[in-house]
Length: 117
Image (cartoon, rainbow, N blue to C red; front, side, top):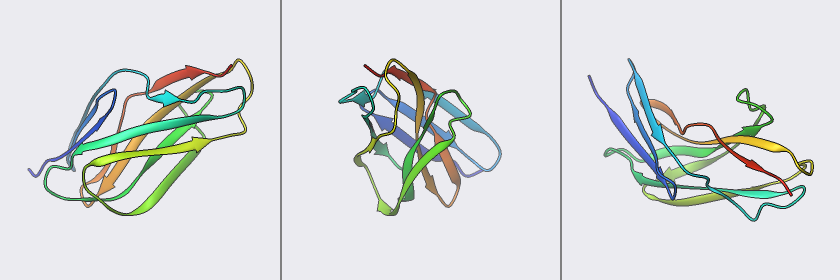
């Protein structure tokens, strides 16, 4: 069985994925610059398991079904990435997760939350 590791930080999202099973460990809040209608989601790929990612991004929304997604295509080894989101409502809890993809499939961070001002 071939495994692929993804590790996201700064608040540590560890992804271990394979075609058969997926294990996800995470913690911490990686949202910054949180305002009434905007926020910035941050992630870091700290390990690719030997194969670069071809896509990375975030899912976010009012619950764990998310409903919103952003990705960028390219060749991504280890490093930080972020994305500013808008159209949020004041005083609202937003759920989000980081994600990355390579030939093994997608790796996802655990659901994290923040509250807009």
